[in-house]
Amino acid sequence: MTTTIVAAGHGKAFRLAAGERIRLGLPDGPQVADMFAFALPGLGERLSTEHTRSCLTRLAPVVGEAFYSSRRRPMLTLVEDTSPGTHDLLLSACDQARYTLLGHAAAHRKCVANVVVALGELGLTLAAIPSPVNLFENVAIGPDGALTIEPPRASRGDAVTLEALMDLVLVVSACPMDIMPTNGEDRRPKPVSVERLGAR
Amino acid sequence: MTTTIVAAGHGKAFRLAAGERIRLGLPDGPQVADMFAFALPGLGERLSTEHTRSCLTRLAPVVGEAFYSSRRRPMLTLVEDTSPGTHDLLLSACDQARYTLLGHAAAHRKCVANVVVALGELGLTLAAIPSPVNLFENVAIGPDGALTIEPPRASRGDAVTLEALMDLVLVVSACPMDIMPTNGEDRRPKPVSVERLGAR
Image (tube, helix red, strand yellow):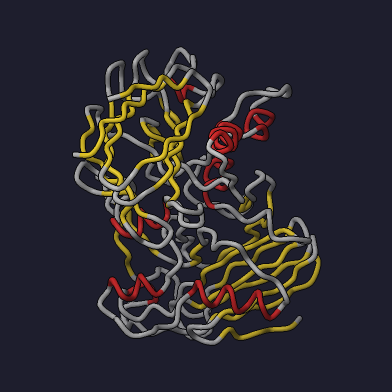
């Protein structure tokens, strides 16, 4: 078992073989982990939030269910979740435009760049950034469809365990958001731990 | 003003200049119109359901709001909506896998193929099918996040009017679903009318 700490505001990509398990955790408190996955070889088949919703007829998987690919194949099973189980599959990954619209005109770290850099470290390039799985993100849906980003319900030590159902590359970005309460009421980006648990 | 009838189960693409308005209507009763849009020239910037939700902090635009692009730019304003205003931005476009999983093993018409064919008629090719705007689709969200496809609340004669905020290509697919009640309790795919209203 090897553990990688993805530094606050940074990203990292991991190649997983079918059957391998990985645990994404919160060593320093509430934090959103933007997660992306792409089938190997090639990145044409991606983890798709819209196909996950369509296949599950649910906004997000619960333990025992899977995240699905753009070809409606199960990619990653949610094996365990010690958090309250609140994850977001609705909102886009942060980019420079997001921070500019929030009033931060200067360059800011962003999940979309983290994905590109992390894949680049594995020699992989991406045509477009898919809609992310925002693990631990707490987005309340009002009766009129209004969406509100609230501090995560997850706390220090919480983790989700995933099992790869195909050979894939998984990308994790410890979201650098420090303006909205995405990463907690303290608005402080924190690290994400990634433990490779090997095959079952 | 020119009107095109998109036949039941088929698709069509339309080039719109910034300022042009277009009305998508239901001449024959309840029906879902899968809608996609891409900025011109090139199709790299797309109508993005996840960026629309993030920019609006709402599941779907209401009249006066816009659909946003993958670069967080407003693309299409929802100018008028004579339907009850129920539209889906959560579920994926139908593909062969969808019908196979529903027990229809034989080839079936599908929105994803309609998009490819419609763009091809304009000499355009697409790398990947984005998450669609499913106009008039009625997806109920349960308190536990369960999603249920119900017959549309829209009825014959209802229409939405959109105004392009940039030069773009808009693709409409009259969804061929005939197994789920997506297109009404009669599960009968119907046409979608497309009226080009010109610039305001």
